[in-house]
Length: 414
Image 1 (cartoon, rainbow, N blue to C red):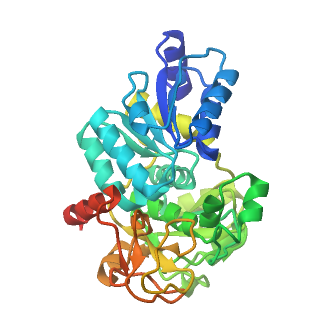
Image 2 (image 1 turned 180 degrees about the vertical axis):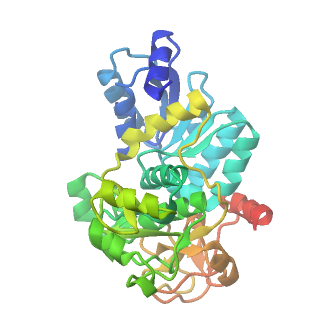
C-alpha cells in the first residue's frame, strides 16, 4: 500500500497523524502550510521562541485546512512535545543546542523525531539514532533536504545492483567563505530569510553539513578536505568526477561531492558491474559512457517533510539516518582573525564556517565540530583567518547539552 493510500485510510477513519512542530521560521512555516492540504495528517502543536511566529503559522494552517482542528501555539518546545495531541515531532530550528534538547525530550516522551536540523544530526546523530532505535522510536532526517534526496538515489542505485562512485548535490549559492550576517543582510531582506541562515549557505557551511550527513549515512567520505566543488552540468560532472588517472579530479571513488551548476538537484554517479548492464545503460541514457549520472533536478525542502513524517508513523521507517556511524564531521575554520579572549559565535555567524573532514582526521588533529559552538565559547589564543580551529584554540561550553551528548558519542563510538 502506498503512503498516499495509507494516509487516506487514516483520513477516512478519523485518526490523522498529529504533528508537533518546533520552529516556525521559513522551513517550519512552509511545512505547516503543506500539512493543511495532506489527508490523514494534522498539526497538533507549534512552538517558536517568538510566540507571534507560532501564532502566525497556526493561523495560516487553520486558514488553509478544510478540517480545522485544535492547535497549541507556545514558546515552550516541551509543552508541544508532551502534548497528548502530538504523535511525532519535527525539529525545524536548525540550532544544534536546541536540537539536542528536543531529541532528549522526545525520547522521554516516547515520540518519533524528524529533523529539519542537519546541524544536530552531524554533531550527535550516531548516538541519537541508536538511542531512538533502542527505544523503538524513529529518528530521521527529512525528505526534501538534499541529503535524504541523494540518499534515496543512492539506495535506489545500490538496490539495482549498480556500483555507486559519487553521491552529491548541486550548490544553490555561490561560495563566499567569509560571508557573515552583515555582508548578506541586504540579500537576506530581499529573499525574506534570516541573515544568519543565508550566511551559513553563502560561506559553505550548509553544503558541508549536508554532505557530512550523507557521508555518515552511506559511509562515503570527501575525496579531499572541503570537497572539490567542480562546476558544470550533467556531462561535465561525469567527466570531472572521475579518477585523476581517467582525466578527472578524484583520488578515489566512494565519495561525496558538491557541484556548482546542478542546483537545485541531487545526483549519484553509477557504473554497471557487467558489460551487458553498461551497454543497456548507454542505450537507455543515450550517452555512451561506462559511468552514468542519475539526477533528480529538484528538492522541495520542508514541503516534502510530511512524507518522512508519514513513513515514520505508518511504517516505522526513516528517510536518512547515520547508518555508517561517525564517518565525517563538519569542523570549524576561522573566517576572520580572532584574538585571544574573543567570544566565538556559531553557524552562520561572524567567526567560523564549516568544512567537511573525515572523522579520523577530526580526532587526530583535535578539530572542533561546528555544532559544538554553543553557549559561551571564547578563544584561548589568537586564531588566524582561514585556520582550522582546534581544542587548543578555544574553550567550549561544557555545560551545554550538545557538548555532553557529543562527549558521550565519542566515548561510545570513537
